[in-house]
Length: 115
Image 1 (spheres, rainbow, N blue to C red):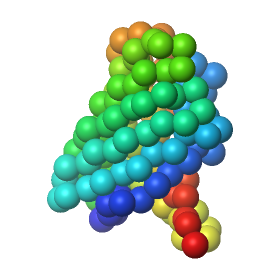
Image 2: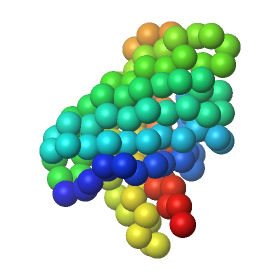
Image 3: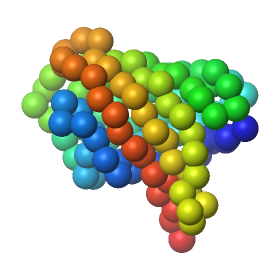
């Protein structure tokens, strides 16, 4: 079972139809099967996430954000948790827009380890 509580993540890759990219930082929290996060940076002015654990390595979320162009967007994401060779948590996401954007995509977020 994974634990996202108080972990930060940055985007490693994202599909063209996504807005998360360089400079976007996600700050996740978790209590039991409840997950939530805040994110901002890059083209994202402010965003938040709410979700739940589905299994030992999968969770689902709903996300919403306001981008720097003033557009509000929402979506759904199914995430599988894995680990990199150097032990960082990796979030492998399959997402789709539900409002404000069009399309589906895949992205990878990697744990940001601070010294």
